[in-house]
Image (tube, rainbow, N blue to C red; front, side, top):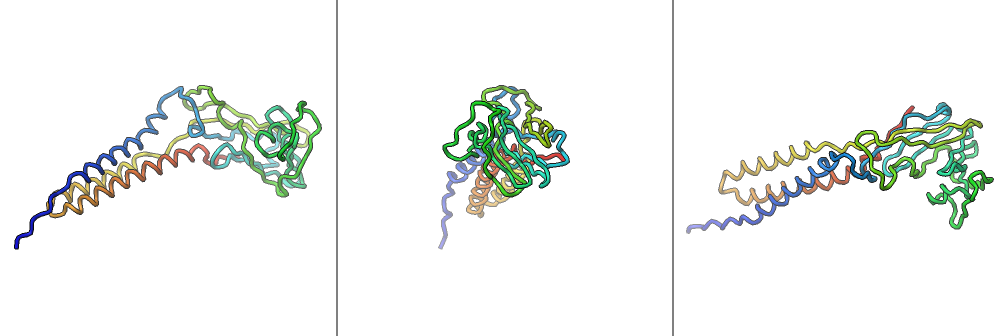
Length: 247
């Protein structure tokens, strides 16, 4: 009895190849997009780097945390340091008793660190209303000064400088830094993996009795390419917030 060969359906292979090609295009797009100078900078395009901690550098450590625009300070338990807000008002206070938030600070209210219903003081020099935020000596918060100004166009490379003022032991100073374009993860490992998988599929395709296996390999290639595109997109989202600190 003669067994008829099952007709080979080319649709799955064509479909998977189309998926793979689309995924490669998605992978290549972030790198090409980042090459255009003068583009509007958004939260995924930058990273904040600390360049100086000011005159109080021996009393605290500072670092930019992963993700978003968070700054973390850890102040010596024997020191008192007051971080100033967007309008120059007393914003956060680090002291031997812990970390406190000024409930009248416009910065505290804008960043939702103050209690609900808190009313900002019209005068930035008004007497603070302190409330306990932490019993420890390390605290992190979202600070808009670390990021780009919405709507402003920036050049490639160093975008701008930023400054977080503070007062320590009665002496004014500031944590300063730079805003830079984030460098995305390399593309070539994903392309090499995809090329190797497709090369294996082509090698198997030379054997006509392994067409089912060809379809499986091609499907795996498309899956790898799609997963690579998703992972690379996610990694671009986290790259700007990489931890950058100065001793």
